[in-house]
Image (cartoon, rainbow, N blue to C red):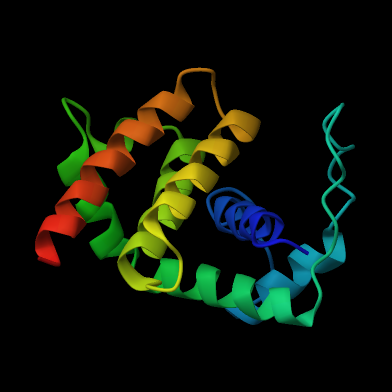
Length: 154
């Protein structure tokens, strides 16, 4: 499985935390429930390859992304809100916020993932899961954050 596909699973799991209630008490159990329920929600988008279940290596990557994004969400949200121009965090769609949170997590805490990869993957997620305006919006916000992080590392 590609990192792109694993990242899409991470996004879907993080997004589900906003809406789907579950009896799974731990993060690991919640993710396990996602895998158990996988494929029952809807048919794949026409013209796209169906999303496949991850292998154990990819599950470890997904767990780390979901766990650490949730662990650092306050700092991540603060960084996102600082980059928004004339917007507040609570005005963002749940989809866009989740995409931004995942990308900013990678940009701040995953030095092995190049920032342009995180930005490009976020844009691809926005194209698939959000509105027509979202890819440009997400690109702008992440561009601002990218420049800020680059300045901090000088």
